[in-house]
Amino acid sequence: MQFDVQKPQPGRLLVRLEGVLDRNAVPSIRKKLLSAIRKNVSEGGVVSLDLSRAPEMDTAGVALLVEALESVSGCHSKLRLTGLSEKAGRLIRLTRLEQVFGLKDASQSPE
Amino acid sequence: MSDSPFIALQKLNSYYGSRQILHEIECTIPRRKITVIMGISGCGKSTLLRHLIGLKPTEAGEMSIEGKDVGTFDESDMRAYRMRMGVLFQGGALFNSLTVAQNVATPLKVHTRLADSTIAIMAAIKLHLVGLTGAADRMPSQLSGGMRKRAGLARALAMDPEILFVDEPSSGLDPITAAGLDDLILELRETLGMTIVVVTHELESAFRIADQMIVMDAGKILVAGAPEEIKSNRDPRVVQFLERRADERRTEDESYMASLLGGRKVECEIEE
Image (cartoon, rainbow over all chains, first blue to last red; front, side):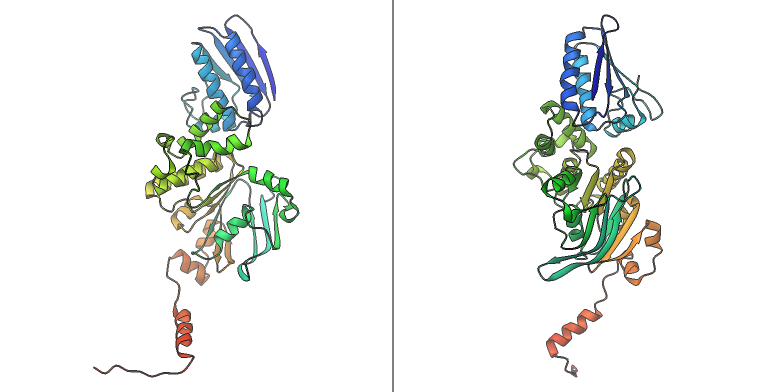
């Protein structure tokens, strides 16, 4: 799985994931993602996680998103998911985490 | 590949010792569908399930997975197949020395390199799916039969299996919990495109969830097809099963009398 980090401006972090976010990919991605958040995010910051090139995930991927959210919230910052596929959205709804990630109904993208 | 069956059985015969349990079984398990295997106790459906999950070797006939004959599988092929499946056994088959959450986490700890914190979240997700969030720290001995079954299902789902085998999901559950489990099975197929095989004799549940049904009797497939085809089938054995009528006992009674009286014609009357 490909992992790319950009810092477009102070307090903002853009992380792009490419590939399948599953139990095989999560162990290595997790270290990079959580480390990037810890190093680069300060209070009031925003972490954008671009999933447009990672349309497929399993519950290991969802668990990683929860860990990222915990980490970002620990820095009093905000996590923003972009490019979430319909399939990934369905999985998040199945796991009853739609409110946690700001998916309000089936037709809506995350905030 | 997408339209080809996940599993295909051809002329499968199965034995326990010299006793033949399955006779010339031919059927397919389609992808991303729910297949329900039904029949009265002792009809061979659990033996068929044991073949499908690779617990019983194929002695006669062929079972193929994605077109590959299981008979040619080596140890690593079979391990790879098992990694793709989740199985809920009748009693839940939990590890009694582990908490419910630890039970669910075990396959992930054994088979993946995921961090403990990721595994803990995944276990919590699966327990929430089956309605057992509050029971994560309980020991299996502290659970009711229905809760054990749901915990077993959470563990079967731990690895996000491509194919899920479920043995008697509704038995021992109250009607509301059983209906909730049916909803979850339907949701897993809808959302994840999971291939699901359910063995049950609960007709209401079977007709609610099935895309395809296989009705077994005395080790043979009586009929297989879509639920509406099964409902309209006029085979007396199928009708008898669907109407939940007890088996005709006349033949058994006749052989019982023959065993007692050696086939002799007897006459007897009671004088009052």
